[in-house]
Image (cartoon, rainbow, N blue to C red; front, side, top):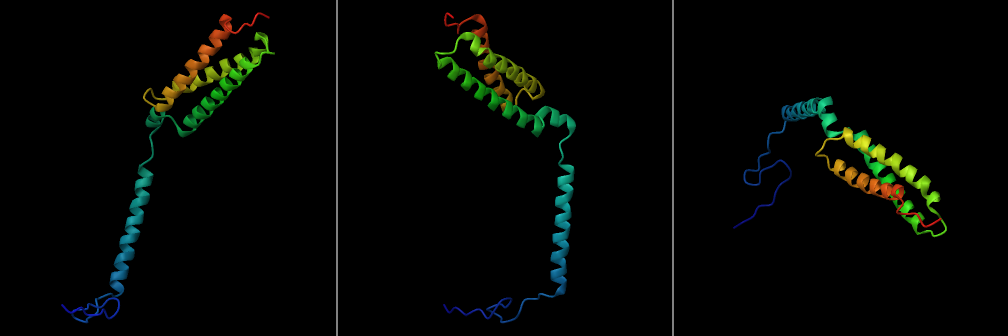
Length: 148
C-alpha cells in the first residue's frame, strides 16, 4: 500500500483538488454561530426561577445566611464547651454563653421555617438546633451547677 503525502490544507490527497471554501461558507458559519449565541441568550432569559420555586428552594441569600448562622452556632457551642472545662468559671459565668446560644437557636429556627422541608440545609439546621436546645435546657435545669 502506497501512502501519498498530503499537499497542504484543503487539498485531497487522492485527487489533488482543493476543497471549496469560499466566502459563502464563512458567512454561513458566522450566521450559524450568531444564531446559536442568540439561542443561548434566550435560554438564560427563560431559565429564571419563579418566586414560588425560589420560596420552595430557598433563595441563595437565605441559604447562605442559614449556613453562616449554623457555623456561628457551632462555634458558640465549642466556646461553651471550652468554658465548661474551665474550672474557675461558675454557673453564673456561663449565662452569657447560654443567652447567645438561645438567640442563635431562635435565628436558626426562623431560617429553617423559610426553607423547604426536603432541603438538606433544613436537616443540618435541625440537628444543630436540637444540640443547642439540649445544652441550653441542661444549663437551665441545673446540670452545670458546680456547687457555687
